Structures are given as C-alpha cells and as structure tokens.
Image (cartoon, rainbow, N blue to C red; front, top):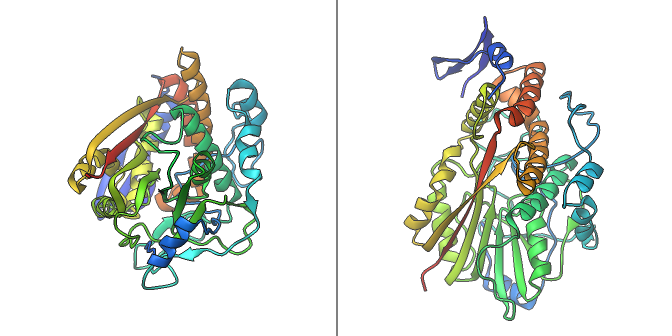
Length: 412
C-alpha cells in the first residue's frame, strides 16, 4: 500500500512503484445514481466457577456503533440525517434503554485478569492503536483500537444488539441448558456477547479470550458475571487452551485483525481445543458493499487498501467455509444474511434493519477517519466529502451488506 495523491481530476495510487489511476473523485461525486493457555489448574478454576472480569477492550477499527448528536472529534457533517438514540428507540423495536440496561447491573470497577500466554506475562507483539500516532515500525503489529476510546466501546455495544436483533439471537448451534458446559468467545472485545451468553446459560462457564489489557485511565466500564472468565491471549499465535476442552466456540467480526494466511492455522487450533462433537460459530461480513455507486466503489477500494497495509486480506473471510472443511470440521453450514443499508427497502422489517445498519456505518466512518486519512494520504476535507456522499448514495443505489454465519462441528 503506497500513498494516494491528487493529480488533475484523478486520485493516483502509488503502490510499490506501480501507478494505478483511481476514478475521479470529482466525477464520482457529480454522478450520483443508481496464547491462550489454560493450565490444568486454570481449567479446574473454570469448572469451579472462579472468574475474573473483562478489560473493556475496543478491538479492531471495524467493530463499532455510537449514535450521538454532536461529535467534537469529527468534522463529518451528519446534521441532516443523523439520528440520536431517542429517534432509534422511537422508530424501531430496538430501544436504547434496553440495550444499556442489561449491562449496568454487572459493571465492576476492576478485577485481575489472567494471562493465558504460556511463555510470557505480556503479549509478545508490537501493538498498534489506530487512533494513536501513526505507527511506522519494522514489524507488522497486531491491529486494535485504543481501549480508552469511549466511542468504540459504545459502538461495540450498539453493534452487538443490532446484530442480535437482526440475527434473532446470539447463537445458532445447539446449546444444552441442563448440564455444565464451557463456551469460548474468541476475540471477545468489550464482552457484550460474552455477558449475554453467561446470563442466558447460567450453567455454562463462558471464557472471553482477548488480546490486550485496557489502558490505565480508561473510563469504560468493566463488565462481568459470576460464570464469566476473561483470559488474555493472542489469536495470531498458538492457542494453548487444553485440547478437547471447549463445548462451543464463537468468534465474530475478526476479519480485519487476522493476518493474511493465518485463518487456516487459527481454525486448526480452534478445532483442537473443541471437544469431540463440539460446535464452532464464526460470524463475519463481506467487506465489499453491494450495489455500490461510484462513491461507495471508492470506499470499498479504500477499505481494501487500508487493510492490505497491515497484512490483512479482507477477501479471506469469503473462504471460511473452505477453511473450516480443510481444518477437519464437519457439518459445515453457511447462512448468508443480506442487510439493506438505509431505508430503501419496502418490507417494514428490512427497512428497520436498514435504518439501524446505516447508523453502524455512520459510526464506522467516524471511527476510522484518522486511520484512513493517514494511511491513504487523503485530506480530512476529502475524506468528509466522500463519506457524506456515501451516506446519501446508500439509499440512492439501494446498497446492502452481507453477513455470514458459519457453523460446524468437530467430529466425534
């Protein structure tokens, strides 16, 4: 990934010495239309119910939602279309008060966190926080978001409940309720899915696996429940959870933090730690916006190029069914869920889903602004111009996104 500069009426991408002309921004904007390790003792702790509480982590830049009337950190103008939380509550079946009420009872100031790396008490990787000063080290870092970022925390909160609403639930594999089981939430983030599952299945012990501690001074709440265990571990390294120890594995929205070529290794590790007959559920989305007009086509290209700069191939999530089969899972299923973006759909339910999802996209744009401006070498004004045009184009082009729920089972 190289720099992007303006030349005449075109954007020119310089990539490893090769030049490729990107479509003109001006013409686009004027043509709107259609490690982790659990010792034997730690495993016993899980079954006995000992627990720690999650860092309120804000993972990769792609996970997020926050609805707010004003945002001093962004110059993007949403005054004509942005909805506040009261609007969302009134216009949809997803009430904000219900979104937040469930976690407030379980907020905890701080508790210790167990490190699951076998060889070190710290994550043996460089760390890049995308909203910090631009990183220019010789080694590719593990990409995540600054854990002090309240917007990212609230965005994850909103995203979790919006997706739960659209998917009609958190889990799409059989979960026994009457026997003790162990559930792993891989790349758990701030822990909203983890908490939901712990409350819904009180006989289960739920492990939230996360890569990084929260930074000192974070104002984000730490959430927990009696049957939750949070562990530190690096998804891109060898997972040292005990073999055949987990009944259900869940991982959502990790496509932009898994380096190119690492999915196969990760899935083999997840299969190893799953119990015979245990289930895995992966939830990812297609990062290419469907039915994109000229502006959204540019946004798709920006997204791809920014991810490539950190060694991530966004297209790999489209091959997860193949990767699951190659890893040795059976009963591999793929469920594609098409979600409109905006309120263009005639069906009442789909219109509501599209309204909610457009808010997620709006917050996503705010969240990645500093990173894309730096990485793509575009000005803030140019970024804002593209984003505002993109938000209009969703309804004009009847654009959509696709989420995919992959489920599979380890052979008995």
